[in-house]
Length: 362
Image 1: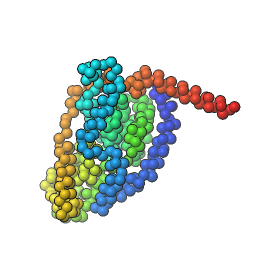
Image 2: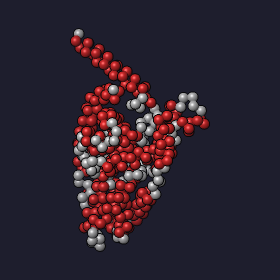
Image 3: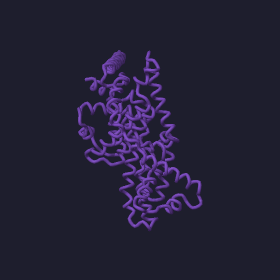
């Protein structure tokens, strides 16, 4: 019942806001020009230009991991100070999630998101998975799981990514992939959608590395005759990109840098040499500073993808239970206080509407 009340309250706002957002997305120059990115070397340059003028570059690309983690830690500290009450300092760590614990939970739900996308029917393009992963990472840069449980934020990220990446599935098709109450899933996903977009600042366009990867493959076919079968590089490169979704590199590097790292990783596995392609075709002869910077970036990306810390599955159940104890019940759709506040808000809106109608009829 409380879910239906929530759906009723948000239905009109949700539909009108989403329509506006979708219209902005369709008219966004990033989308209009995205169709041209990554087709060949000239378009590779265009893709780089597009990215550097995008909201992704301006608002969601950070200098290093320390900057990202600082923002994440600030979220936790703000939450603890607001909700600690009379709790003594020595008890805070036992009651609230620590930074390390929250990161483990977030990584666990990122893993569940990728697994959900891999098993999705009909089969989902990798760009949808990549966009959904990016949304989830962005959301928890400025939020904590103790305010918004990642279970339904995760599902909403995937559903929104389907729309933005034009993978056309209805909400009924989408929830058919859920293993639990589909009616509840439908309403919770729809009710979280506007919230998610708001916390993403309506920056919905994501530049994924899959597009520049296509550009590199086409470019190698025409510029590197020593490689007779450039398509042989695709499989390992795509696997590299999918593995990279378990890291934060989408918050730190450009899509072209990530795609180039994937191509070079694949080439090294195939025993192919692309050094001259990078130094001459991409960087240009004599540009030592840019070459040094590019090499350092590629090394950093490949290191991060290679050295992904394993998830400690044994701690997940304990952290889930701890989260239930310390989460903000006012933002928990299944809590009594949430239902009560929702009903109070609905009643207040009905009273306001009644008063306006009465005044109009005078």
